[in-house]
Image (cartoon, rainbow, N blue to C red):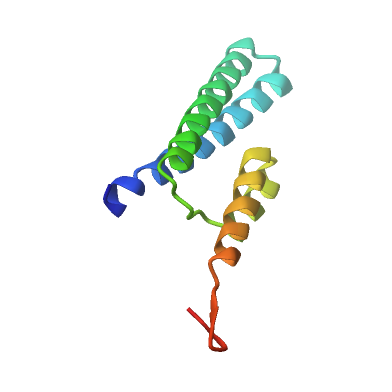
Amino acid sequence: MSSNENNQNTPGLIAGHAQYVKGAVEETIGNLTNAASWKTSGEHDKSAAVSAMREAGEKRENDNQSHGFGAAEEKAGKLVGCEGMLREGKESERKQESRVVWAGGRTI
């Protein structure tokens, strides 16, 4: 599988996170204004986003992709309150750190 094919999962994760944030905003507007349509739309977007992110994450794992956004993804997860982003960020940062190999006093 080419690296271009592997990178197709990243936009799925990013789009899923964007959709989740959009849904959270819609749901908040619905709660603040007592507008059931906004609340329902937000709940639907959040649910669809979680499914899309789960699918993209599983595909990334199945493709043995060990790259991610690391600390940036973790910080973004903290900012928007997304536990999945926090977990993915920590995991990809851990994988990046484990790839550093010492050979004759040099990192390669």
